[in-house]
Amino acid sequence: MNKPTSETPKIILHWLDRSRAQRILWLLIELGVQYEIKTYKRDSNMLAPPELKAVHGMGKSPIITIGGRPIAESAFIIEYLCDHFGPHLIPRKWKEGCEGEISGETEEWMRFRYFMHYSEGSLMSTMVLVLKSAPAPFFIRPIVSRIAAQLHTAIVVPGFATHLPFLEEQLASAPAGGPYLCGEKLTGADIMISFPLLAARQLPDALTQKNFPRLWKYTELIESSPSYKRAVEKVVELEGEYILI
Image (cartoon, rainbow, N blue to C red):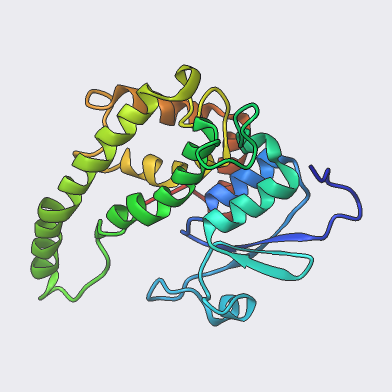
């Protein structure tokens, strides 16, 4: 582990309002590294400003720069920072005596790698289908509402009907009884999946305490983390409120 020192390259979190950068902020606080925040505002169409594209060619948040090098994509950012500053957030990779062998990886590590990619690749693909009540001309608002309702019924609800029971079962079968997805300890995968799950809890007919008690308790566990609470306070300081969806 590279402990942060005065010689550690400067880490800048390029913060776009109303973005998924919250979990990167949580990670930075959890790791105890020094960082700076550079803020960007969305335009009237809720698009990122061109200044963000000057940092990284995709122009999307989250982005960090470390020592002047831009790093994008949430999972890559989390893995990179954990590799250098937070190996305690990565489960042990190899079973005893199985170093380098195919299928020699621990269940904890396999889960960690899977959920790092699942969070954006599968779960967030359902989340982005949730249409927000964006401004629209008054004469087409009924059409927008009707399409949103149809998509919610045809795609979003069935999507959650697959993901949430799966995650409930994953928590039930977590190594050592959990309470985290990869076992007894918080990992980068828990930080990665926090955004879509906490957002899902705010949606009707999605993540409820009655239907998914383990997932509900898991999200409460995330919210009880001191570093997560500090991240929420920082978001409120930056934006005036903390909104996931």
